Length: 605
Image (cartoon, rainbow, N blue to C red; front, side, top):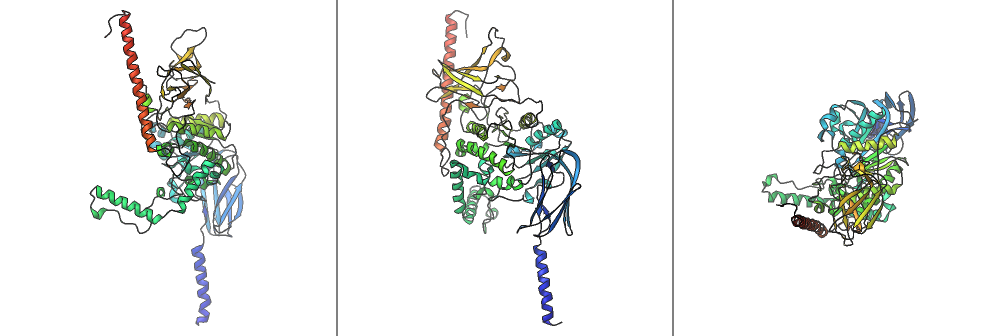
């Protein structure tokens, strides 16, 4: 055959080969897998990618729809009418040409997102009471989808396959439940049992994440504090040298190896490019930076309809040098508003589980020394930021400070999921389940006392007549542990149980504060507060303060939130107040002993 005859054949063959190489295989969005739960009572979207121009045939049970892949990415989507909840398994198929994807065991129910940082991601199998919970986890109508670290500098349209744990949705069994988000499992299992509706939990929590990373990127322009912060991140991105950062990390590793006298042949290899950089080292992608977690772990599946969100975060934003309560409050509001806008759900239910305890517990002996740090201010900003979104029963701040186990990852998680389930069952599902909150309606300084009044009764669940966890201060701003009491109900003698008192009003005083002007409750990382709304264990009274002595954060995002010098001063002042109170109490004890002797009431040793 002559060359002129061969040439067209070669060209045709190369073109066919190129087309085959470039052909995009039929693909579904990663959130769509076997065993998934789809949101009831809302349109059902099925979407994915293929070669641009391909016709995609999609069946949803007995319903069918056709889509055409379009654009450079070959995106296609179909939408089926809303359906009621159903426990009857449905099959979904998507096909084009010789390609076909089939999904099985799909149910219609409610989809909840369990978002936050590591304490939300913490698996059920590693928590206290895991043995009992997992043995009861044979719940075929409860499903779980877990996304691991997937922070991104730009908004993603899909989830990386490597970030999807176990390939997608899992049915709850005693074995699989061990890997479920502990809080998400407890929350979802209670909802499923109480409603009989299939429940899906999407766990997209990221360990070490700051709130800044969880806010949709476009929302930062809506407030000056947020906008200034976003601008500082953008500047870091623009000036970032990945190669220089990689060498800096390598040099630091070599220095560490030298100090530890590691043999040279085991030293880290000098990077060729920037291959040793983790996301933490990359501005704009770091889990501390604007929108990075939203970009890869929440906004990446926004085509899916959801029922609501439970959120648990706070540790990273409570660290001294990162503690900016004013900015946190702004971002909390922007984050929730962004979720509602992005998922087209103006009344999306959201429950924020407060920054949990974790340090050594506060008690009467160490009270002042433990009342330091920024944790309490972050809790306050969580509550107030959520309130700034607007008054709605579908938004809730759920206190968690009383669930106390020392450590970064407290083993008690069941309480958080249980409380969130109570809130949801009452306010979202309208069931006859108790869920209460209380508010401070007035605070008054009268002589040497502070008088606090609440809109509901607040007392300990063990019916103790002694409220604990309060402090008061004078004009000098020095807070000391306060004595607290209720007043007896009119015409009734005191019996020693809270129910015999007027538990809507609390009187506070301290011999160290002659003229109090402010009060605080539960104001420590792991506070001593014992009050519950109406005495119910699942409804702690939220921490609060009546003063306006704010955390000294800098509004300049380029400097530390609180200088190291302040951290030392804050700690030293807290210890000093503790010593002052202990000295005063010892002095008063001696005075009492002397009086007893003087009054001749027997020899006192």
